[in-house]
Length: 600
Image (cartoon, rainbow, N blue to C red; front, side, top):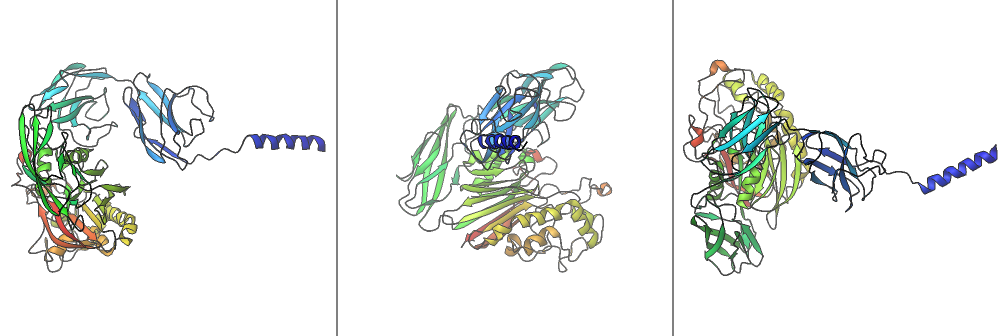
């Protein structure tokens, strides 16, 4: 018996020697949506502590031939390498049958799991959508035809920028630019394009006033017969340094007809070159302002711009213009919003922006047009004329950050957008609540928790701010305790310690506007709202509809570190109309906050 037991143990020892223990599943695999229409891409994100050039992601039918037991059974239907420690990828589904599938993240051209597999469902289209033309002249209507096996009186089609804020994952991201109902099992419809910029767009056919796709969306391009034009005829590019290689891009700025677009240099220093695609490059030889003449040429004509580059012999960015800007649904409430946004940023000579209400990927379009760097989610974003070298993903569902290279110094820029309801000035001015009730409502809104989480997430940045300055920009949807004071009565109140402003100040951040303008009575700095002057109801205060909108300062640029405030203002363009905002020069319903810093 002992001999038999020894033999068994010996066999087990050999077995364990030739088959080592399997590594733990220690990575992650997620998908943007678990329900995908056949023909759309599977979009996934992955991470692993075991990166390898031949790690891969494979799609299998379920149940099917996937490596359920981490061993080969059959081939994948689609696959792609995922070589980095973390990243994103896509897998096409064209040609696959509707049904259940599973996505596996696998090691080194093999079948060892790096993460738990993810179940997916591919759904069949329940309709068709066709355009009379996929190229439309801006101003002309988009003509379309549709059919569906799920007719409904409130089925609809919506037009969105591409890439943009459409319901890519069959859920709301932002409002459509144009839309119309498409009732019945089939028919035709049109979407107007008046006031829209040239560029790429996408049309979605959606079910019952919601965002469920009835079929795959259709892309199109808006073109123009207008002569080419720059948003403004004179503007400044990012700074340059004597003796250092320089590059900037202007190729995305031209509006109007861009058919055959090319660029030439018409004047300027010998060191600066302009490529046909609009890249400005060279190595400056002397400090001072370099002025270039640049001409854009298309099939419809030419446009000229005077471009300035500040060439520095010392610090690359001795002064920094920082902006906090709520775009108002990406600017989609205002016609020709992209060109107006570009004009504002160029004429104000902005360096970095913390953005709220991105509306999908509107910021990507804006940054690409400027030739700037960007980091975004569907709501908040950072854009910079200087390179972004690091990022912090979304915190508390409401903020993100980017590290920006300013040459000899870096900057950490945070952008935050806090919850909007209930709204403190309404509770105070309409509801006449006690101060404690106001603070309780701030907590109910989620803003108090959000700002505390954001400040906590900023702790490492704040600790390093002596060498790397930190900015916190945002639409906080709440006033400041520096404005509601015993010396500055608002709606009959004295001091109110609004948590969204006390938390940043307690963390060592300084309100740049209030530092520039210490007296809230003489310089209120109102940012809500240059457009909305009359309360339109809601928030539980419909009885006050038609009364004056409580005006307040709810957008901020806070800072900490080696910066000095030279100026700070609430800014907008023109005289915004409340009754016809689509025609406004200003593309937001908030004022932006522009602070100019000396970089010490």
